[in-house]
Image (cartoon, rainbow, N blue to C red):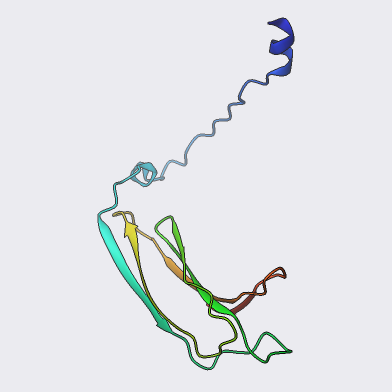
Length: 116
């Protein structure tokens, strides 16, 4: 037991006082009450990120409400049509955002952003 006790590291604790005007309601984990249905239909006239094929492999990443959703990749297409539907759940907390990123899939290389 002494040998095990020397190896194990107890969890460290760090506490910091909250600012006086901080709204404690923002710390609550509220149940989602709202659903946002998002339909990604299409994109037109995208920039060709693949130099050899003069095309892109686009897909859309949607982030919001603690959720990340992604459309399928449409290969070698500058006018892709996804026609995909997603649902993201939101609580009643203020300042919740949704972000859309249009990306070109490069396979094993780093993906390139086409738009936001």
